[in-house]
Amino acid sequence: QVQLLEPGGGLVQPGGSLRLSCGAFGSMFSINYMGWYRQAPGKQRELVAIITSGGSTNYADSVKGRFTISRDNAKNIVYLQMNSLKSEDTAVYYCNADALVPSGDEYNYWGQGTQVTVSS
Image 1 (tube, rainbow, N blue to C red):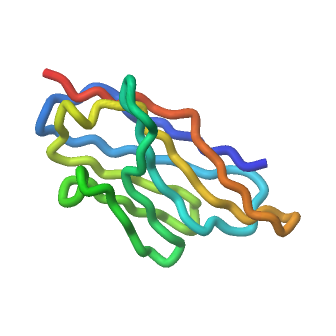
Image 2 (image 1 turned 180 degrees about the vertical axis):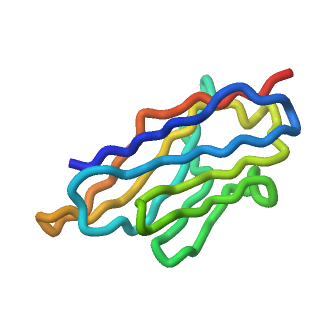
């Protein structure tokens, strides 16, 4: 079983910065991609950013140039550095990962979510 744990989140003023982190723990051989999604009240969950084990990244248009995703493959940790935050970035942010487990199967996992609120 693999668990994704996401400490962090919180309240930040518009224009401010925040860094989210997510660690993957449990029995697994490797993690293909890790990413962040978010869900604002009344809206569908949407992709924010994703990174492969090789370091290739993809971002939602709304966060390009402001957010940076990175990962530490040795520690199975993914980070999301969020700069120039806007009120519309307010949402619950979820970590997501595809992990190859000892059975040889690959499963998709979700973190429990962490609240990010951008407000003055």
